[in-house]
Image 1 (tube, each protein chain N blue to C red):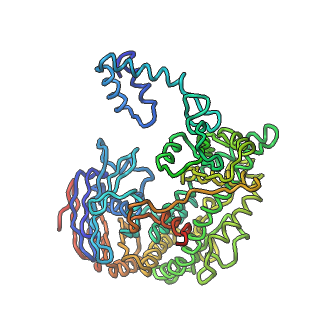
Image 2: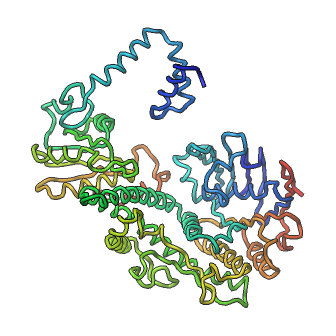
Image 3: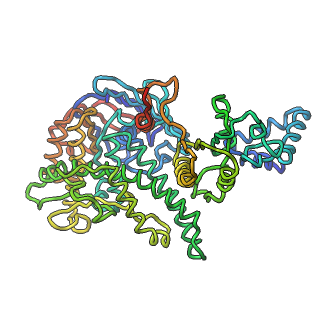
Length: 384
Length: 198
C-alpha cells in the first residue's frame, strides 16, 4: 500500500496517509480513530468491516457517503482502488479512475490479515463467527468465492422460504405435489452451490490447520497441542480425509451428490421445522486444545493465543501462496498480550513486507516495530 | 409533508418501481406545472392501459387483442417455442431479429421468498400448449440468476418426459465487444464450461 485517503469515513472528515513498506505505527489516545483507518483498509480488501455487519456506521455522522481511496502496488503494478460507500444503495468502485462493473471486482487487489480485540469471538463466539472467518479467508485466497458465497446464501433463503410455506400446507392437509417438486429443484441448486463452498472450506482448513497449529506452538510453546478441524453438518457422510492436512482434496462434484442425499434424508424434519438442516451454513470450525474444545474450556490467555494463532496461520498461508504479499494489520493487540506472545507476534510482524500497528501509547509497541510513526489526534494524523 | 392531494400524488408515484421519494416529488411538481393538455393525454393513456390492454390468451404477452401480434402472425415458426419470464423479455429477444418462433411468457420466476411457485406462473398453460401444438423445441430463456436458473431446472424436469421434444437453454458467457480480462470469474467459468467446437 502506498497511500490511503479517506473522506467522511467513521470519525474522519478527511485523512491523507502516505504509506511505506515495513512497519507503520499509529499512536494516539483512545477514540481518536486509529482503528477506523485500519477498518478502511480492511474494507478495500474484503468489502466488509471487522466491526459491524452493515455499512451505515461507516459513514461519518450526518453525511451521505464515505470515500476510501487506496493506492496499492500488486506484483509490480500500481493500482488505485476507490470505493464509495453509500448505505442503502449499491456501493461503487473504481480502479485507476475507471469504473468496474461491481465492487466485488476489486477483491483480490489487496490482501490483508487483520488481528483485533474482536477476534476473541473466533474462539468464544457462535459458529457463525468461525464460518465468517473461513469464508472471508476463502475470498482473500480466491476472490471468486465471494460470488459462490452470495449464490449459496440466496438459494438458502429461497429454499427456507419454500420449506416454511410447504411445511404449513402439509400440516394442513394433503401433500402439495407442486411445492414438493419445486423443493427438488431448490435441493439441486443448494447442493451444487453448497458443495462448491463446502469443498473450498474443507481444502482451506486442510491447508490452514498446520499453519495455525505451528503458530500456536510459537506463541505458547509449553501449551497443550492444538487441533483445528472442520465440523460438517454431513457428519459421517463426509468422505474420510476431507479437510485434513495431507488428506484427499475435497471435490465439489462428489460433495454435491452427498449433500443431495443428505437433503433427501432430512426432508421430513426440514418440512416440519421450516429450515434447511444440512449444508455449509450449519457447519463449524472445531478448535481443540489438548482434548477439550477451546470454547468453554480455554482460559482467557489460551483463547487469545488461539485467536492469534488463527490470524497468524492465515497470514502464513496467504504468504505461502501466489497473489502478492498480504498486508498485516494489528489493531491495538499488543496491550492484550503477555511478553512471550508479544515477542512472537512482533517477530512475525517485523518480517512482514508491510504491517500497520495501532497502539494507545508508545510503550505498547515492541522495539522491533519502530518504523514510520504517526501521531493520531483529534481529526488529524501527523508524522512523528 | 405537503398538504392533501399533492402529498397523495407523491405517495402514489413513490410506490412505482424505481421511483424514490425525491423523484416522486420532482415528478409531482412537474405535473403541477405542466400544460393541462399534456396531463389530459397522460390521464387518457392511464385510463386505457387498464381497460384496453390484455394478455394474449396463447402466450401471455401483453396484447391489444385476444391474441398478440406474434401469435397471430402465420409466418412464425410454430415448432419453436421460447419461454421467457416477462413480456419485456419478449421484446429483448425480438430485437435480435434472430428468432422466428413463438413465445411463452411465464409471468415471473420461481421465487418462494415472494410466494411465487409454479401455480403462480403460467406452467399449466405451457403444458397445455405443448400437448396441443406441434412444438419440437423449447428454448428456455429465463434470467441467468438464482431464481431464473431454478425455474429453468424446474422446466427441464417438467418437460423431459415429452417424447421427441428438444429442450435447450440459452448459452451464457462473455458479452460481445467485451474484454476477456475484465470478465468476472463466474461468467468466464460458465463460458468455459459451455464452450463449443469450431
